[in-house]
Image (cartoon, rainbow, N blue to C red; front, top):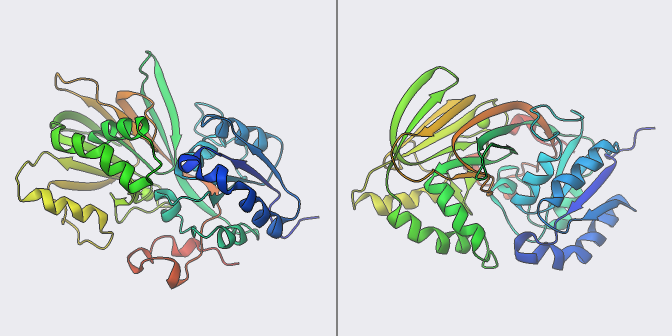
Length: 340
Ligand SMILES: [Mg+2]
């Protein structure tokens, strides 16, 4: 007999949010039990564990796998829906759920999942879900060979790869925004423009001079930067954003507009956005290997390719009451609103 909610398995990453998820887990556990009764879960010991735990739960037949943690945990749990290196999910009907583990997050924001765990846990009930796109990245691995990663939010290379490497080396205890700012500032001031050759949808080739390029499924990254205000999670396309090489002094304060999701098109100096299903990129200058950031991880460097996987993930996303989201993103995903 079909229950009124998905049979769920919770993958908890206690290290998420600088340990906030681990500290909040006893309270979160009670909240989940109030909504689901007795439930199954596993605590990962390290970040890589989340993907393996999720994959095992998918294979064991659970209907929904809930990531308890922040953006990194969600990305890893989503990766567990796929066999390593395979673009199709292991069991296409399985639903990805999200329970924020005491920290905010960029992808959590794009999903409209509320930060209040009691509200977020209630949203996990019911059998509604939305089909969303995922990304598939192949890069040159640091140890040679190829690094392959699924992603749900944003992949980028150039300046973003370098910033993300610094963020990952620093403590994230200050929260997403401050950690990002402290780690990013030296890079933002010194990262030189690079020369990239990009191939769009396997056809059009372009040579670009840029500090970085973002391949966005979600709209936000870097602790609240709205890299792609018009990005939709369900249009089968990436929003590709090229950050040009302007060094004019008057442009520097204008870059703050990246935090404004309501900014008009063209408000970011030197930035260009287009949509694509696939992107190949390589550095064509004599600089060091250009680092990749994929959902906050650093799997490798250019050359790399990015492919959208349309409607690859069934996801429990948040509701759309006006109080829960800023008006500018009302239109996004409205057709996929959870109707419970
Ligand atoms: Mg899209």
